[in-house]
Image 1: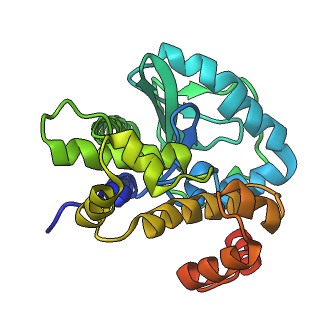
Image 2: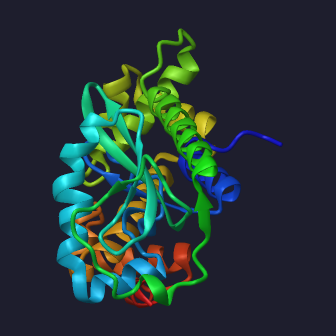
Image 3: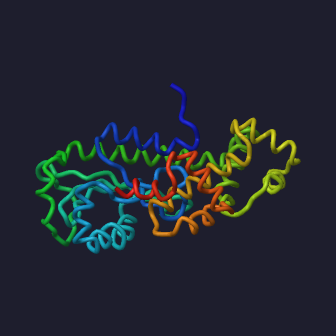
Length: 279
């Protein structure tokens, strides 16, 4: 079986973790962008039990998972298992890049199977919904340690993948591949040209055109649009911006062109995509 494409590596690694643990993974993306590489639903707690709790206690979820956790997790560099205010158990591991908290990985949700000696419990208690989800697996404490270790292994895989964007390898082709990817990630919402890329990597325009085709199997414009479409789909899922605002924020300059290329790629118009994604 071949290795996943660079763009697919994060989601492939997360799928492997989910298959092994039977838990859903959510990512809080703080300082190093992951949204171009993951589907938008990865960035929110969207499990049925979480959505039910949020209808009445969203403030408590925000306080526990964001306001307090992001400070507390610094004390648990190897991760922790905790129980939220609604009684759901989840496993959390921080990811540091360059000394900063870049991502937080959440795996859950489950019920505690027995007495957890090391379970960190929220000081608040909300019992409105926990009993309504008997389908949640009861995880014994012995398995909890294995889940946390698997989450650490996922962190290592994601860090390895991230470091490949700035490799120490002396391979010119690998370095140029990652240099081009990083350039597009940084500039795709603007109006970069093949001339800008050529100047950035120190080659002539003609050679750069052939290099992009050689390394990625497609032309510069298609590669640029792939990144812009990833941004547009994320904004449609996670913001209330209008389609026109998303068009320009993603780097597209013409609304009609944006509609055509979005429809061709996703088999749905932007509004249809947003409606389906929110259902």
